[in-house]
Image (cartoon, rainbow, N blue to C red):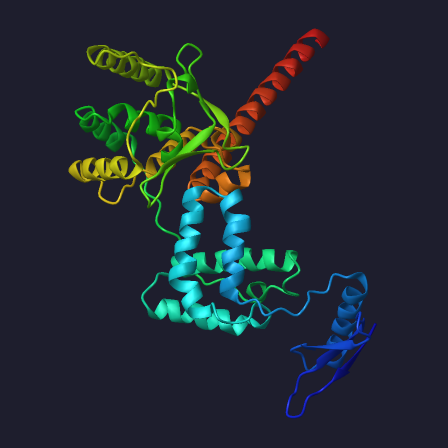
Length: 390
């Protein structure tokens, strides 16, 4: 098995010509691969790499698979078995509506970075936000990474370009004063226990709506989070285990939250008794659909002057208020179920400058006060020693 380099007529880049071993019919097949470089040194290095892959059986075979055909396989063999239903549904919508109509007919092995760059540019021209286009890039990068792993491509073209830039959405948090005003207004609605629990635990909407009474220990004051609820476009409601091990966690409840849930459970029990039923341990605590909860939150937020504050901002508010009280970021990470403390610090880095200043001032006060105490003790020892000697 050998290979050689040539330059095609009118081309400035090198092409590798690989000589495959004889097949069962005694024929030898050549494989031509455009190396996309005019540097002879880089071309030789790439040729050596290709020959090594050919000899070890790791060289992807020429394929007529299109991008559309591959993405369909990726959805079936990777996304659906491994990802949350809502996540897979979002990927499928993106692939069917945008990616396949624009890139679907291109052979997978012929897909180049310039195809992707033009695709992103065309998306922006249609009015899609930079954040949405960035999400398309992340999806394609992940899918094409699987293509390389499965031996369908030599390299991932999405890895050769910078992801589209976008401005991070502004994070809204509720101040202590506005929080009390919001809760006072929420008390007049049926969603009060849910909104209160969200603000006092930092749980995700999907986690809250998946809670059963057996997940809550009102004696030891804890909630055990093991699953999440997803409502699909088909109208189907599904429950899934939390997406990471860190998301599967126990969250301590404040005394006021325990009291709210105690009263709410008693109310549910009475309602069930009037209906001739008993409240079961595996009954949902908050039996509402995600969109219903979101609309109720937004309506209430607007009513109290908190325009733009989303339900997810209850989670940000919980974390922000904890950090402002100098609660260690590791504790905040555990309560939120972040995969790592780096995620927590990255998301809430805007709060850190204030905490840094408070830490610096606290350190200054501590060291200076200890210095004064040490100086006083030294002087007293000196005076005492002088008195003895005299």
